[in-house]
Image 1 (cartoon, rainbow, N blue to C red):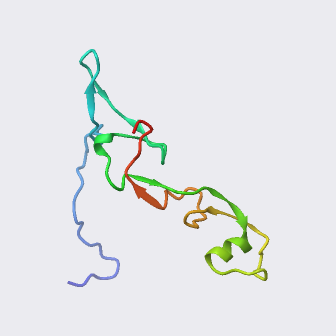
Image 2: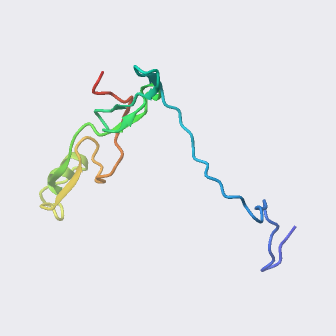
Image 3: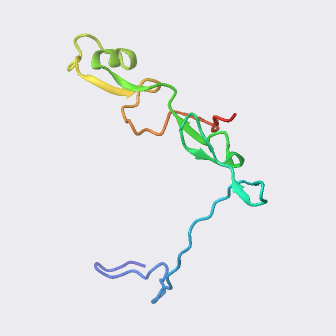
Length: 123
């Protein structure tokens, strides 16, 4: 079936004319343990690598993303000599480049080059 120029195709699905508003939120599971009064209490811990709170019962092998070294600056000459073989005659060799020293990423908001289970301060 060929469509003529400007002809509209039939819709793949139809939306309701008057949708009902709803307040449905995504659900997630947290472990709970009862306190002294018998009330269930969520047992979250703080990860010492990524500094986020996590539920130990939902921890898995790739739950945490972090960098193993610091984010800092080096001159472009040193940065390129480590990662791409730069020399003294590299253009802008005195320019300071900020990067993660573990992986070379120049994005300060990079989620991390290492994936591992969360590790709590309580462990």
